[in-house]
Length: 481
Ligand SMILES: *Cc1c(COP(=O)(O)O)cnc(C)c1O
Image (cartoon, rainbow, N blue to C red; front, side, top):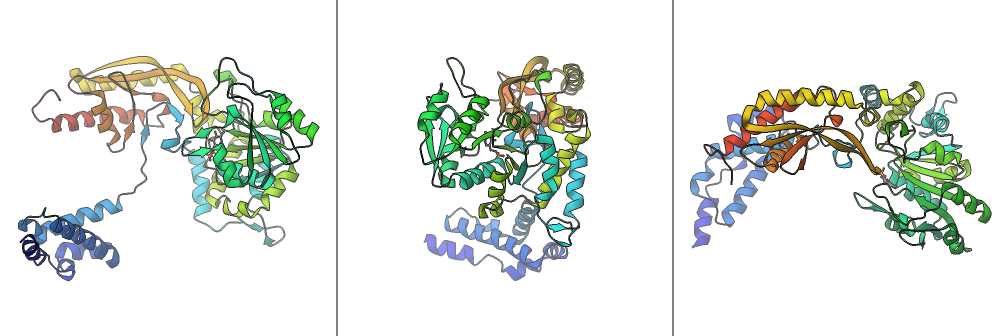
């Protein structure tokens, strides 16, 4: 019986040709390609058939105009870009989930120029023959880091993989147990090590590893001693880790290369801003570590990239590893990274022109006046519908840098009178553009530090819209739950 009922429903479904001949669909066919529109029609019809099989369709739902509405919506949804711009109000500057470092307009402009033209990506204009894509960055990067040679790849995970696979395949790499890190997005030192074909030789204890732990682990199969920056945590209390000087000395004594996975890759000293425990790339190189790897889009403030800097002999070996071809950087990134590095060479204070650094080093007075402006604008927008206070809070550098350093600054806290903070957070997150906030206690917090140019002005109208939307949903009810 169910069968015969659904059979009769199936017979009501209009043909694809019939649907395509509808005036509104014909209008779509002027704008969109025939296969795309047909595929959208089929998606809706397949969905309808599935629902008929499940017994969840009433005959009147199969009307032609209803299907056309659904197809219009399907086309609209498919064409909404998946990737969208949003407002980061979390105060976490290098937020890995939110795209890490935003680029400056000057850097972005370079990317557009290179993207929309032919370029000498792999062409030597002097010689009139094939050149190397890595050559463009090399001298600038070498000047800035003090390294003999440099190689850039897709990201730092790729850099570590390439270094281990080149220097230690089938051989042992000594790492302290306190440094077997996991970074978000499943980058784990032991697993990257396994993928590279190198063999992990753990030494020491979680909290303490001494130079003699490394020395005792050295044998004829040792290829490399690796130190890893504990980017997103610190081991505190009764601790001991090997210093860079000790590491270099052990390497020299045993004729073994040394490497540091630095993670963030800061090129400027941030101690003037109270952020003292981030070792710069130059420091690691000058101490004599043979290879250092770091990201392009963390504290460096550039596009996603991994940079390997160090002794020419070792970097050259990595460059000719076939893996380097698979991990190579694309031309847009190359253009963006080169332009970012130029900012470091150009300015006495790169914090002025590199957005991530500018946000990290933003002065408290500037932040406070922004917070006050947003707060008073919110007060007039929301009136008595929320309590608004400014509190002293702490943002973060993020991106696995300086996990214990807070970026002290004001935050605007909004506590809705008639509904929960999580409802407001949710509505802001689903807004257009989305605003990403943090909830603390019953407050939604806005940190002005990570607001980009002109975004401060958008906060109040967007919060107002979120309130209207929530209160619209609640209808006449003045209280939720
Ligand atoms: C972030 C990080 C990585 C991964 O770098 P990506 O550029 O995200 O691939 C590797 N090692 C350390 C120590 C890190 O902090």
